Length: 116
Length: 112
Image (cartoon, rainbow over all chains, first blue to last red; front, side, top):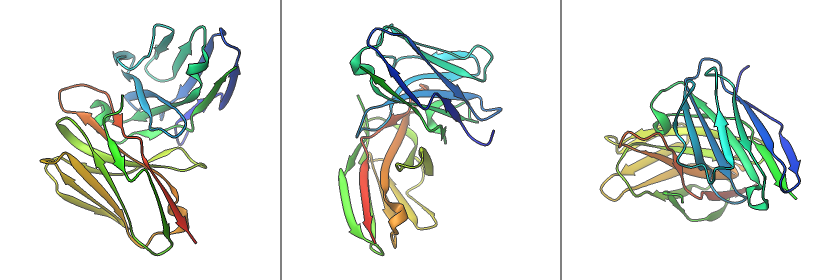
């Protein structure tokens, strides 16, 4: 595809449910990032993959958050036992650079998660 | 917690006027980036300025970087209604980490 795609675009979950958010990066991009964006705020870094290796997961807020990129392309962000404070837009970005966050990233449209 | 701080938080101007947004950051960096986000589209990369550059231009955008003050500014000249969006600066520490730090953003509204 031409850009980064994410699915679903909208997700409503009842508190305590598990959710899985998918990201399809631009083909061939080495780097993949996940961010959480609260209303009116900038994106907050969650985790970074270089190919299939998760090199930085320092931003994951708790052990309920888990991300994977098993074949170095598609990535899934999983949130277990969702809580209301998890409500946010989850953004995925990819980059052709292997230099982490220091270079241009291409963002997907995001998944808006609402936990009720 | 976010590293970058933008000011002003919000800015409202008339079409044709210039808009200036400022960003401050806390650590040593290799480069600094500016992104735009509007309601209809996701985050879009605007411009990247390296730590050894002081000024960079791209179309109607002018970015400055002062590493001694750990600050940057984004100037949009001859603004258009389509420039209405939130603007974020983003940095990554040059200590070998991979994290990108975004500020809280400046919300720009350009009135036609």
